[in-house]
Image (cartoon, rainbow over all chains, first blue to last red; front, top):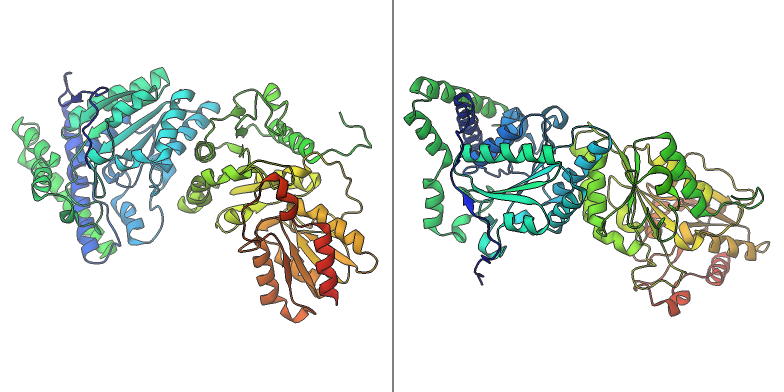
Amino acid sequence: MTLAPDRRAEVPVVESSSGPGPADDTRRSLLRHMLMARGVDEEAIQLQKQGALDLWLSCQGQEAAQVGSALAVGSGTTIFPSYREHAVALTRGVPPDELLAQWAGRTFCGWDPQRHRFFPYTLVLAAQTLHAVGYSIGCRLQGLDSAAVVYVGDGATSEGDMSEAMNLAAVESAPVLFICQNNGWAISKPATEQMRTSVAARARGFGIESSLISGQDPEVVYADCLRAIRRVRTEKAPYLIEIRVSRIHGHSTSDAQELYRSRDDIDKARASDPVRAYADRLAGLGLVDSGWLDAVEADVRQTRKQLVKRYA
Amino acid sequence: MNSPRRPASLAETINATLADLMEHDPRVVLLGEDIGRLGGVFRVTRGLQPRFGKDRVRDSLLAESTIIGQAVGMAMSGLVPICEIQFDGFAYVAANQLTTQAARIGHRWNGQITPSMVVRIPSGGGIRGVEHHSESNEGLFARAPGISVACPSTAQDADQILRYAVGSGSPVVIYEPIRLYWKRTQVQGAEPARTPTAARICRRGSDLTVATFGGAVPVVLQAARALSPQVDVEVVDLRWVAPLDTDLILESVARTGRLLIVHEAPKFAGMGAEVAATVAEDGFGTLKAPIRRLAPGRTQYPPADRENDYLISAEQITDEVLVMMK
């Protein structure tokens, strides 16, 4: 049964930025990180097919949301990821080979969480939301920078811990930015069967300000996340951003999305690829030329080669 | 204030130890339902919020996953949270954050952080509690690698264990027997434990070892006194159920040749099974008689009117010991 969405409390989707947009260097940086994340993700899928990785949870289609948000919140904020935030990790400076280590069964966390202020992946859904709020309160009690960012997917928002964390952050006025990447699917359960309102509307019920944005354009994501993290810091209060993204691949390399998702829907997700769209746009604007793109491509190729050497 | 001749109760001692720990370590914060304004439903934290302030003695939301989940985050930030779960039966709601998160943080972080956190759980029956207020679920967390589980039965042990736990670098769950909170029995001639994590012989004897812990300890001691001098019973207070002090158990059984285990949680898959298996594996040759266990059946804790039928009595223990000595 699919219930009609409850429109009474709906939050409008922001599709485009109203401001002047980020500086040209930032725009190139957004694209460079998105291209690198795409290359690493493609190589990880290949390595999984070859048996070198046990599992991979692709983030393809979510690069604009991840890179845009990671660049906007800056390197000083502590990030509590879920398990699909590969583009966030790479943007934060986690080396690609360290990112893949846990999926090759070598460790539960391949990188240095303190150094990158990017904490280990948490595989029990939404458990990390309470950690982020507790961490923020703990830092505040010790007079330390207490801004934290926590990532969840749409599926995880059904967990009790997510609701508990939103309520705790609200009543404690904890400076935590919740970023929900809604890719429309909790493995095989479509978002329409998971919730009657948007996650952004739900946050407001807890007394948390929120916005709902498209994850297609990294500049929209960057602008909204920049505004949100500034607000979190100045008002010392939580905020939630729901980013609508498209999931190009299945939930994981073990998933078979063709069994439950229409061909048309999968094709649509592929066609609206945010990486390709942004590369074309910046090239069209003359912000990147073929020399720049070739240099990034060479960098990505070199990274992929190193991953093959390490894991294949 | 206590008069010099009036021994402090378990609840008063825990209160004093918490105050002392907070006094000497600014990282220690308390977190739990009704622990501040009210001083806890058992008043164990009475007077601590006025003394240390609302930041450090925190009245939590009425959500156990929230308590443990935020404590994990606080521990990551460098604090040492001491949580209280109001009653044993509510520990299940916190079990996910405890077992899948708190227990695994150190390992997941490759040892880069070693967060200390303590979870105090008032537990056990004999208090005419309503449903979910008299349970013994220590076995649930004892089988979770990464969590240590203590079950002190005396004020002195609770003090020592609490002080050890806040510096242990990993989560410790402490089960506090509710029915002993206000008892003022002075422990006579008790030998101190060899280490903070060791078991303790609380009565020397030569004929038979009874291993027990928590609220059952005074019942076992009562039975041991009743059996004397006919049977000379040694009583081992395990103090910790995870990890177990197997050395002391094996040493005691090597001397007495007989082992009875008594506890309040159901016998099936209870801690007694682990103690019995340890002695069967590593001390079988020292046994003069089969190992026996005395614990309730695999039934839920009953309504208060029937709890005396459920709990193991001193008479059941003396009867069992006499059978084992035949």
